[in-house]
Amino acid sequence: MARHPLDEMPPEESERLQGIYEPFTQVVRDLVDATIRTTVDEAEVLKVQAELEDIVARLRERELDGSFAVSNRGRHWGNTVVGIRNAAAPPVHVERDSSGRAWADFHLGAAYEGPPGLVHGGVSALILDQLLGEATGAGGKPGMTASLTLTYRRATPLGDLRVEAWIERSEGIKTWAKGHISNADGITVEAEGLFILPRWAREAPQPPEGSFE
Image 1 (cartoon, rainbow, N blue to C red):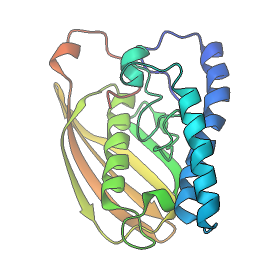
Image 2: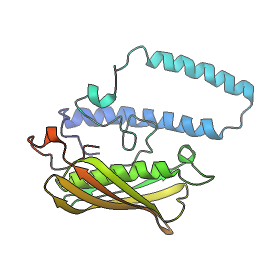
Image 3: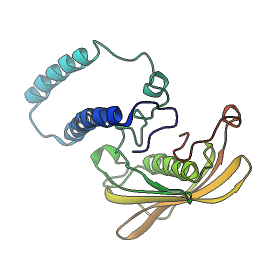
Image 4: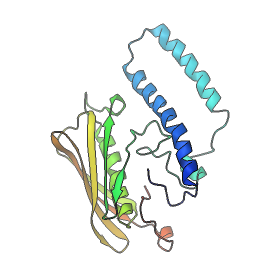
């Protein structure tokens, strides 16, 4: 995962912490999936609940005051799409190139269901918003989402998916990007967005990659 421009942590320390928190977060992600799909008896559910309450209390003995990025120089490990410390994130491991393209292969399971067996439309919007922003940042035109329009071509099944995004055009502080989600049968959702470099960032040095998402 690309380092955020505000992240000054040495790469070796970042890698060490990723090695700890990625598997830790995955266990919590697995817990969410198991919570949805378990068929154990009610007594067992109550026992697990008590154990989890104890675990939560242990983790809350020391915690951040507020969001992760605010407390960690903007590092986006708490991001709800790509955050390696956010169990709500799939996560989506993004690849990028400097031409202004971004893509990822990912898997959505039971936690992302809307209609039976299908991805919630809001989850598709969330992922496409992130990837369009990643593409603009990769192409040296980072910005905040000003508008996002989605066209749902067909239902998106849960399972293995791919998302792709690219810069369509740019004019000054405005950048337009497009993208889509697909599975083995083709495109399911398309998106088009407008991204604007925020006022506070217009005079600052612009990062070569990454987004302000």
